[in-house]
Image (tube, rainbow, N blue to C red; front, top):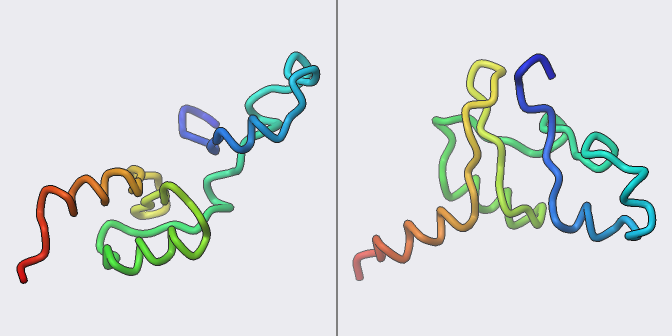
Length: 89
């Protein structure tokens, strides 16, 4: 909306629509508005963010700063970081 991301469409969103209806649907019909998703701020604790993703079965969280989308925190990126930086024993 006005050059700002409005929402996301995930593979499960697409899979929920029968193929014969695809020509009658657009991204706006399928999307989840970003402001309807749980979100975090840049200064939020990473462990709490991962718990929030897990509790809501999300693969990502929008990161909002001063009411504007600043980025996405993805589960894949968190897992990649953890794999490259193992916890000291």
